[in-house]
Amino acid sequence: MDGQIEMKAAIYVRVSTDETRQDLNNQLDPLKKMVEALEFETYKVYQDYASGGNSNRPGFQEMLEDARKRKFDLIFVWALDRFSREGILNTLSYLKILKQSNVALKSLQESWLDTRDEGMSELFIAIFSWVAKQERERLVERIKAGLKGKKNVGKRGKDKTPRKKSGYYLRWKNTPKKRPPKKNNKNYEGKPISK
Image 1: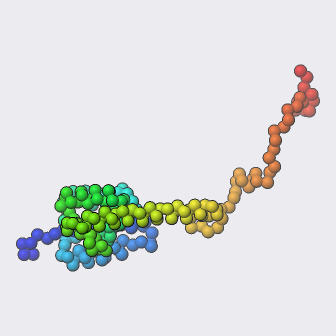
Image 2: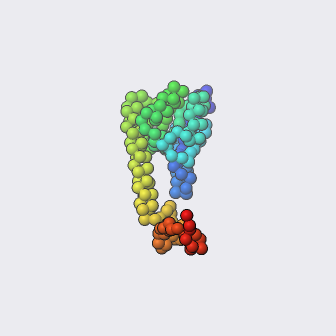
Image 3: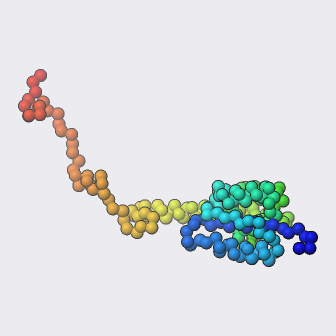
């Protein structure tokens, strides 16, 4: 190195679940290549298997804390929706925290998203934060509708067979409803009770 200060970068990757369909490496490998191509030193890779719909993500919280401590200069993300899907206000508040700490955010998929550049990026961030939140809300609605549809036909989860009825239901389904016996004036032996 020729007296130049090496810039440090953090990489943040997130997938919604830890199922095999989603792999962090699909985001991580291209991000590592980007960091290397832009001649940054990778400080740390932060990762989460969680919804971007709230900030209760351990990797995300650790990254924000390290940003406040100025442990790196730039955060690389696959796309803005990987960073946050909480809507405009929350996303902008995270970016404000980063800006106050002199840490920038850069997206691989959205070339316009580089908070080192002033101007239009704030407008685009507001628009795309809103879009990401809307997409999340539609996804939640589709999941709820799918679960309701399965419930209506007696199916659950990945199980394609109708639920088996058992227990109380089977024992009483064909039993006629019993009415309480009429009060009579007879004892247990059937003899009249004298008053």
